[in-house]
Length: 370
Image 1 (cartoon, rainbow, N blue to C red):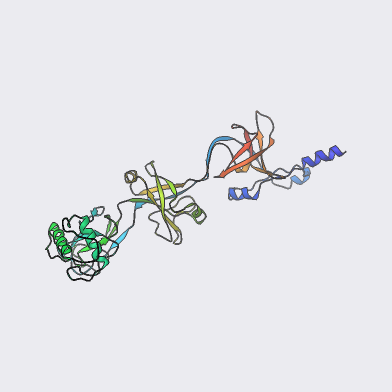
Image 2: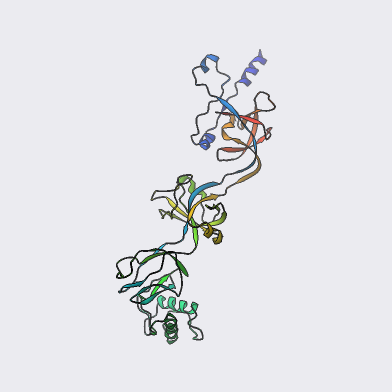
């Protein structure tokens, strides 16, 4: 009699799906579990759940995520003309302008691109008080090669040598050699060269009525807008892989995360990339601009690589069953025999799949609800 009770007690082992794995499934459907302790009559009141089997695979499992985005030119910036006059020349869309070259023209005089973080707010010439704008100008004159042999130092003083360097620069431009630089004659931008993204003004229009054009950096970046539940995977300076529209792959580094930033064309994608003013814009700097330029502005898929298990036995998480006393098991069919419950150790879980280890082989079939 004691032996019979022991057999019955063992037969009442509960097999339930743990709550953690239900969360992993994310609403993929309810799972019915066999309850051998129920009387036959009570089971009839419950919907019949069909079961099937899937093959145990052996391969690699990664916890990385993929988010769709866009490849676009970096740092769009509007250029507003200073001073007064009429626009007499404008660049074409797609043109690349380097520091020292004409960006556009007002009243027949070139407005030149120079490198600097501060726009000019005053005319610069002999007698002007010291300032960081003078320092910016002198740095550009040195880089452009107009200060050779003058002993020009990079500081905020407008010296006689500075005026000579300015005249050399004006001569190279074919402009009148005054030795002074008007604030409307130069556009200071952080980039050493820019690409014209859009021309907003028209030839013959007066300056000061709005932006003349929009420029970008010449480098392409990948831009994505991940969902809130994905943001924790995006870390500054983290390495990522970018799948290009032409099938190529380029590695990159997460350069910035800006809350509510412009999407740069990112639209759609796994996890909800796309619209929403409060989404975080993630910008990825790319290692290989050559590959990026071959693909051009287009859609991309950015992969954040997480933990990876190689040569792993892999089953769907729906095959996992929690056992009384802890641990997990799977029902295994092998060589045509009836399914038996096999305890397993759980490893990496990702993409609704789980790594397992135990008395299970690749090619076995495990029971899953349909």
